[in-house]
Image (cartoon, rainbow, N blue to C red; front, side, top):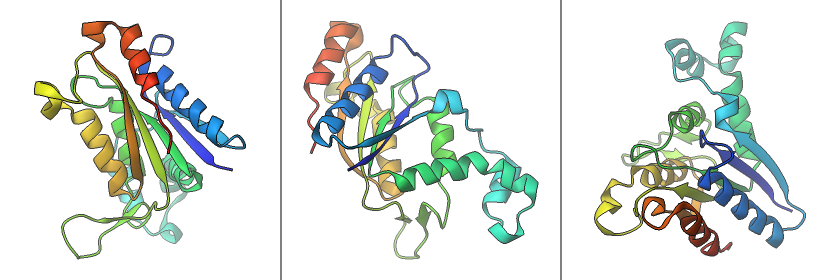
Length: 201
């Protein structure tokens, strides 16, 4: 049995290629692991806050010294991290907007990046060590242009950042599935190409 955390972030609901692609990834995972439990987490509905001074101060205050107000401020962050800890597989939807991820997904990342909880500084090298180990992730994305190759590839900040962040906190990114070139070949064809490319390891 696998525990799957499905994270959605597109501001579009009905006509989002990323949401449709993400659902197909989850479906194929559950086909492979029929007893899986899927938890849905939509960052457009949860509305995690953008970082504030009181929130950052609360993160770095020892738990036994936090006030009730500080505990309330970081409640959603704690819950989001607990969901990640419980998951075996993460399916994360990261549509490209203005060459990068949505602000709601960035806020989610800012809320789960917690020193001593999801990563730690070791003093050995530049990068910290991720603490959310033994977890795998699949990324779904959609874009008007083609960013997996060619002249636009260097400008794919959405996937390069999402992959980097997940691996930074210890999660292994297995694959990225793309509904790309929507402005060139059409949304329906691009989405079908993305669905056809899905392979679950």
